Amino acid sequence: MYADALQRAGDPRGELIALQAAAAEHPTDAAIATAVDRHLAAHELYLLGALAPGSKPGTVAIWWRLGFVDRVDLSMSTTAEALAILDIIATLPSCRLLRELAIMPATHRPLDDAAIGDRLVALGRPATLSQLMIGTPRWSVTPALRRAFPRLADADLAIDKVLATARTGGVIPWNRAARLTAVQAQQRVARIATRLATPDAFGIEVDPAVFATDAAVVGGGRVRELVVPAERTVFIEGDLTVEGVFEQAFRSAPVLVFGNLTCGSVCTSGYLVVMGDLVVADVFYGFYGASTNYGTHVFGDVRIATLVLEDDHHLGTHRGMQITRTELLAVEHLQARGLDLETQAHLVAGLRGVTAGG
Picture 1 (cartoon, rainbow, N blue to C red):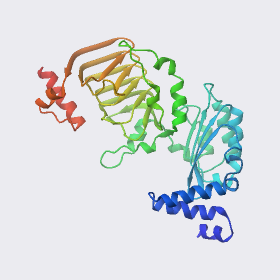
Picture 2: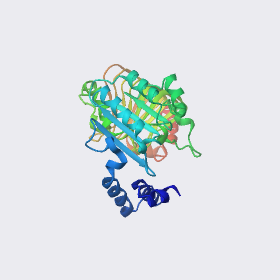
Picture 3: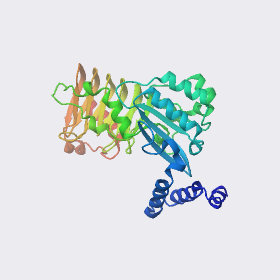
Picture 4: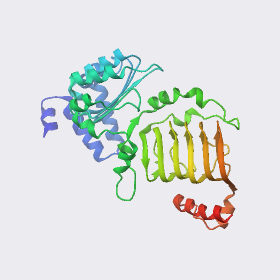
């Protein structure tokens, strides 16, 4: 085997491959995980060269896979720094199987996306690159980059493409979406911090710290329905239309929509922020809120056919609000109506009957 041959030759990569293979087979084994970390620390100069900690500008986050770097997230202050790191990645043996690369600005000043893209095209490596993000999640792969890196054809941030890969049972594979580290998510939110700090009509501000976690990033588009995952923050870049139910169950991840959100119905027990307009054709059901970080904040106009708020869910607006019908319901009221509080989709369907019947 390749790892055995490397070990016999005294190459530290051979031992790393063996250790990481064992870690993949036994993901909960702390001893193996510790052995991997120690091996990487002992041989970081050999394995990473100029990418080793303390030897390069900016912030470089690295993920490994069976002895080779699988993903690199760069946070650079200048375009020149980013270009220098790309030159290193293109020639570093550990990066020859790199699949994911994210290059984000470390300050409020944007990087030169075109210059970075041109450098990648000129380098043409690593050939295995299949997911790329430059500057901001709105950036898109250019034709020249697609020719240089054919595998990038599948790296589409459009939400309908992400949802189209849903597995049997309707589970959305959010791991197929682009990803931001917690630092990158903070940087993205920092660009709209002034707007978020503006109190709504009730004097309540959005807490940016809610979004300071790893984030899944998808583009706008149109989908039949959307179920928010629980494991990471969701950024929607652009306008999103959900023909059916937008479902954000209790303790689901917070959602930040940078454009408009248009839905058939919304059922949320989480933290939902819409920077544009919120339009709901049928029922908006908000459950839980008060002093917790569970609420809905809209910075554009709000148009809702039927608004149902329960247990102090906060609906904050910064502009106009047009509501056709409003109901403030207590838990006991819903239970008396025989609605299934555990199943969000059934709840919305039941609320149609409640609101129609008065």
